[in-house]
Image 1 (cartoon, rainbow, N blue to C red):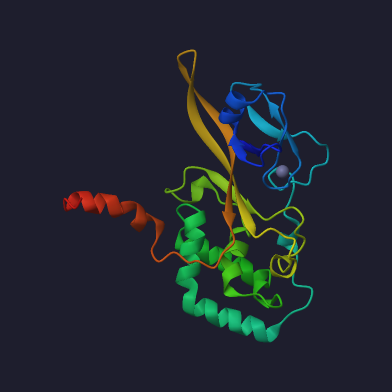
Image 2 (image 1 turned 135 degrees about the vertical axis):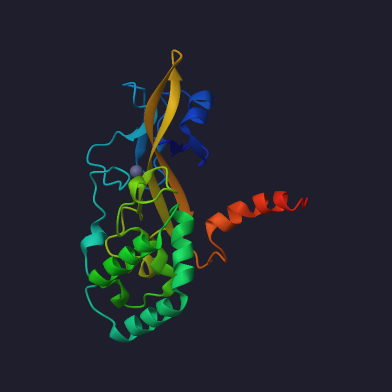
Length: 236
Ligand SMILES: [Zn+2]
């Protein structure tokens, strides 16, 4: 992992800042599970200095081997009437749900989005009691892992997780203690010069997002292209 919380001030620091400000012996806390993280020095040419969960048996979902327990569950009781409402809202506003998924998940193609909808159908996501449209984009994002091979607008592969205490999707809106956050766990490959030679290295980057009910009004590429358009027409 590329960042950790300093328990002394509660702030999040990236590994390079950590090494400058503190010592490599100082341990931190994981932003996802809150467990202890230690600095692990560069051990091979392909891995950089990073934080790792030094506690055995950590249930942190940022560790690849930990599956997300809620993904294979079905609703324990089904709410038919609410499902009909959510499906109808979704049919009307699926473009907003798409935009929100795309905001967190670079280069989402409609084909992939359709796959998410099909997965949601298989896992009967619509039928959770008291589910609202606002939770759909986040639940959708946890339904599969996103590969860099599936979109040319995506540089890295990644997956999304909720906090490790979450056992079922409906705890997101039932359990007040569950943090309203989602994390993107990304495997980033980059080049670094080692003794003048360019080497491919890999690091895990974890990005935190709030779960909210704000929908983007336009696709990410439109927002990003606005400066290009301004330059084209000489608008300062
Ligand atoms: Zn963790």
